[in-house]
Length: 82
Image (cartoon, rainbow, N blue to C red; front, side):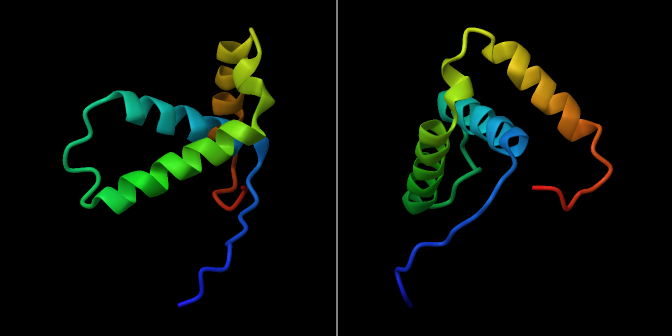
């Protein structure tokens, strides 16, 4: 199997909400969620990539920006939006 990169495009709202979830997950006990150390490494790498891409996480208004992103996603009619 090739080790070629996989490219995924996400909306900023999806990326922000996903980053926050991954960051919270990293702070908590998650026994049973990951079955192998490789899964944890993959989650850490994804979190790191999101962190590098999101200037919002350094904004003093981060909590508001996150709440707005969550509200927009929750109000979205299309499950296919990314």
